[in-house]
Length: 129
Length: 129
DNA sequence: GTATTACCTAGAGTATACTCTATGTCAAGG
DNA sequence: CCTTGACATAGAGTATACTCTAGGTAATAC
Image (cartoon, rainbow over the protein chains, first blue to last red):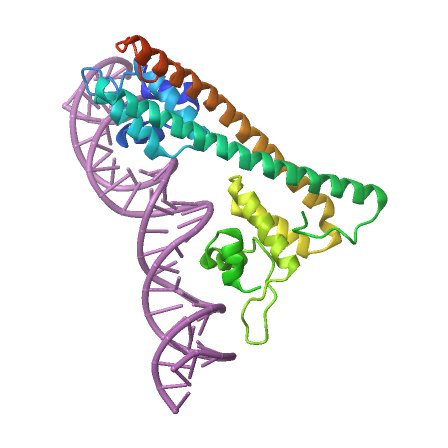
């Protein structure tokens, strides 16, 4: 699969695909004889993983570290395991923050709706709650 | 409340507090006679709101836009209402991405645990799933 | 009365994650 | 043969969100 096709498949620019490879978020992609990238299933799995992690907001660095450990072979398995658990905890914490903010937003939104219905606008304090 | 106290209370640097004010994420803070910031309850509410939004990952720009609309008075109520709903949708989408990534991480982590238990290490493919 | 401390502003610097530019290679079409 | 189009690299540029520096004021502390 060419870089253009992969770009289209995942909805990400070719520049970003090359960037992900450059910084080690995915291992070096298979090349065709002329040096062009020719993504194989394995490569696509790595791309998919990288995009998934990034879209959840995980930093590039952690993903690249995982790939590096992976490339170092079986001796790094427990380290990789620990790294994945760390990423998981980061995401759980992040989700918690989002849930708190969603609650706060819901309260604010509801106050706006009540205020508009009743015409009671004066008490709409800004940072409140 | 001095900026130092607020900084401590919210676990955020004084620089960041001034920055939030500068970019309009919070309205101008009450000043004491000598020109120093002296945060009142209202100011603290705005600070708390800004920190909450930011920690959920919402961009500075949207928060500042809300504050600007707020300062323009009652004519902007429906716009503010809409803005809050937009932010909410952004966060719901972000939470969805996190949930997907958590699932993927869980599968990977479990495979690592099974692999370590059974000594079956060879099939631990990187980007898989 | 001067040194220290806490604050102020304006503007420069940094980290992260892309994104764009300049320049070059290579294969196929006219 | 030469142009066109798709790819390549290296390195510069951009956006976002802080973070730091330099230089100044104002109120205690000694």
